[in-house]
Image (tube, rainbow, N blue to C red; front, side, top):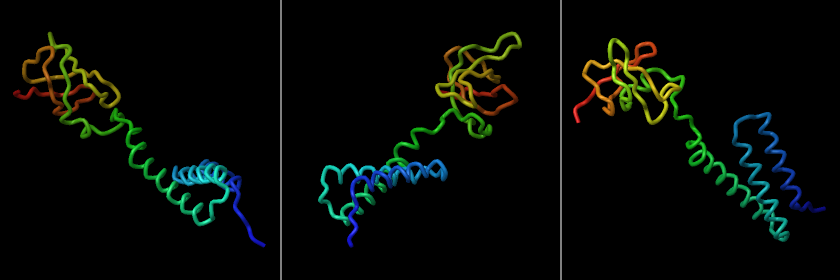
Length: 152
């Protein structure tokens, strides 16, 4: 008695692997399930495909999907706001002065990418700062940045 894998076997395996991701959250089993779904679709179109080719396509597709996820897609999905990180993560970042310090009030600096959850921060600067100046974070004191102007 010989057993032949049909396209729906691969579809069922793919769905089982994808559903297993709900219980084992590693986000790698999902890609093996997607590879199985791809083999099921290919086998539906070409039912004479041998078992060795089916397994080869599944291994290559699963590896390819996994590689694409970890090297291309996942790095693009990271949070670049640096919210919740320590102050060392923001030291040296540069921003542009949008309000100068006057009469004992702090100035405001704006960053192109939000730092620690906000793109505008109050600042203190030892040098004179003008609107539009580029300043760099030297330290963080509570909710205020201590910045410095660097020579151009």
